[in-house]
Length: 236
Length: 236
Image (cartoon, rainbow over all chains, first blue to last red; front, side):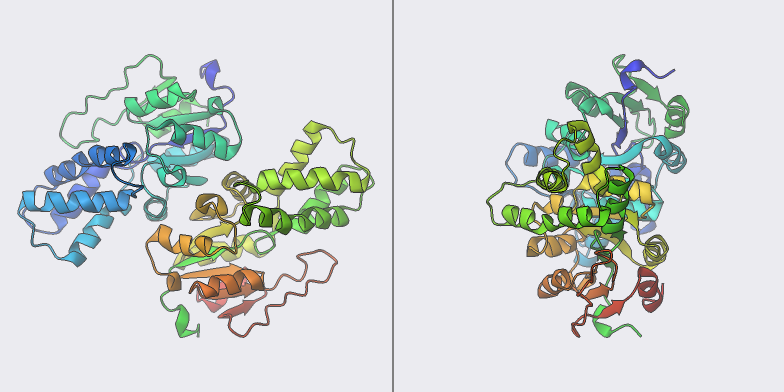
């Protein structure tokens, strides 16, 4: 039986990078396919390592509102020289930057979302920009009812404006929106705004590097190893 | 052969009320089902008549940013007394106001969109708010790749920020977005921003009342009588 605290939930809001799609493996495959002799996983992790600091510059006000596409590009330009790729052309950089639009879903994602959608409204709540999330969904077959993004709220997670913004968009209470994410910090910030939480364990989020986030916070309503398991437990 | 001016189009952005869904017939049916002895079509048209003036109050700055759900409710409260329904309860008003989330598509809409989606990215560009458009799409089976709304841009059509905003979201040029609408004024405002245009003739938009907007502007790239015809002409 699901806990009573989620009896009123109508909307499931999903973190995307790492929770629904495998950024590390997808970026690594794109980089290795370039045939430049670069370790794809190391490159992917170096690129991703710039992500939180770049968003923090926006959250702190040091940078004005900047989309993830543009943050990814700023980071890419700093990562390329570290791998001896400073001579990469502008056109190739633009193409590689859009690898984030071409991330592959985890094997359970499409089936899980399709089942969850029967009973709930399913939306993204991602720091990815709208165009990125739309292109990703179209390519990967992610059946979102609505694509919501930090871009709509002009705030990045974990700012409260994002979690409360989902409830506001649907005209419902925060308790009626459950966040689904592979990241404890994201879920705790959502909980502080009143949203129930479902942790999805993704041990391979960082490829072969250990993922220490195992979702062991007992406050989370759910802890699952796939979106299919979440669908099972929600009776979808 | 489609005109050469649309060779680069990648995104089709759709007006929704009147173009994709039949607001007049849908609202009329909901009102008549209440069994209050009110002429459903007259009520629907009176409610809709308040729409442009209410948005104009937002566009002029007289009102701060206000969602269509809230504008619909303000108008509803002024329309009810004109039909002798001033005693309607708060709960009934809230339910009736959400009739705009339950609008039925025109008979060709789902098939046309499904075909157009194979070749293009299809999105809404509606003055309706995100929650309304999401609930509508889920109920009616409208297969949007992305739901965009005036709510994202904090501007109502025909403000240029809306048309240019679609191109900006996708990181493409205005010439790569075609607006599809049943309203010549909407299409002309989009054209002024560089977007190609497809007029869809909806003679029953206002029920039995004549719709004088027949899309006879020769500048429009397409003039069709259904979204299925548009799919045919675009080779989808």
